[in-house]
Image (cartoon, rainbow, N blue to C red; front, side):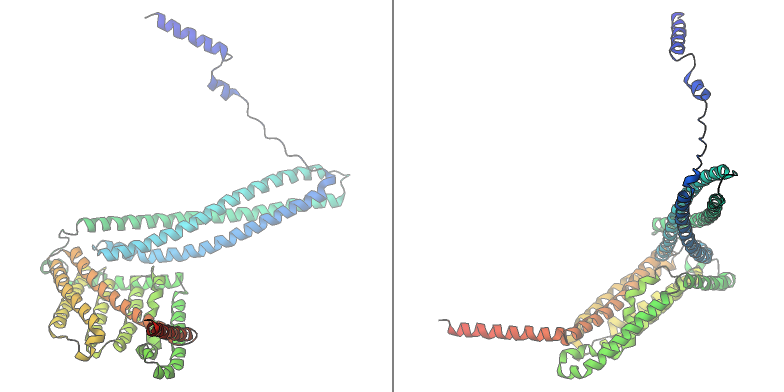
Length: 508
């Protein structure tokens, strides 16, 4: 027992002897710090050449600082627009999340806030690069300043030529001005980084709230998440009195913020429609006479007879530019697309189908009213029930009373069968959605009804787009230059058939 402490003491003494009598920590702490070497002044004979080199370096630094400042100013404007948009949306979206919104609306909110996060992240990376660049430029300026300050001290001698002293002083002054500009740019970047981090925190909070609401909605999709319609605590009048005006003002604010952040979106949409309409109008003037000679073109003429409506219908191709638009603008763009689509379909389908087109348009507008009223849960619920009930009654009429005329059975038979299949499916889905909403399963009812109705809207738009594209392809293949190639191909096929007939006749 006594031997072990003695051995430890001996080992400690040996360690101290071999380490020079001090422990490592003491040796490290006792070692003196290396002094910073004093800057070496430039020899006076080399001042003119070194001054030119220094001024060239300062011009390069000034250019970098100016470029980064311009980029930072652009980020500042973008950040200001994003902040305005976030301010306008966060109040309405926060209130909306307290009303158990449907999954489709939660998905749209998630996309919007993820877009905010991506745009802020891009700006944050650019600001980080600028901050690093600013520190590097300031380090270069500090080194230049030390060297030329030492040179200035050595040049303050009576025997120094005045021109050399003046050159040194000019370089020192230029370094100071460039350093002030670089520090100002760095401070501006740091201020923007602070503002941007605040907005990123708000976006993360919003996405976290949306994610929690989405998880809760998916988890409770088959659980009653609201009271039955006959036992609601809040009446429609009370809800509208409390939150109606606030909801309308929030929608207007978010729409104004979106228009400010994307000022050219509507211009791009209008230019697309104008160009397509002008092209279709020009094609109609050229093909009108040609259609009398080629019956195949008659099928495409209804598209050319409505160039403006066709252009509006084809603008569905650029609707993704409104991916981050608020609900009000989405509703307006949807109406601008759907109504001309219905007008074009009236020319492509038989007159007996007009009632179906009118019903689709009405149901779409009712659905957009429900989305706009999403922050008013009682009103949105009543609108949804009316929409689903009206759609169910109309589908019953379609199956019992709507029939395709006999003269159109050959050309539109497939469309008629598709409509009947959709109607039968709707009479299973829509009543289930209606009953689920009535008894308090709001998320489940909304999910069933929205999936069916949105599928109908998309089917109508896609059918119209396909018919338009089919007509345009027909026109392209009938006119020059592709039309002449098609004629050559037909002549070649006729010659091949005649050759085969001659060979068959000559064969034994």
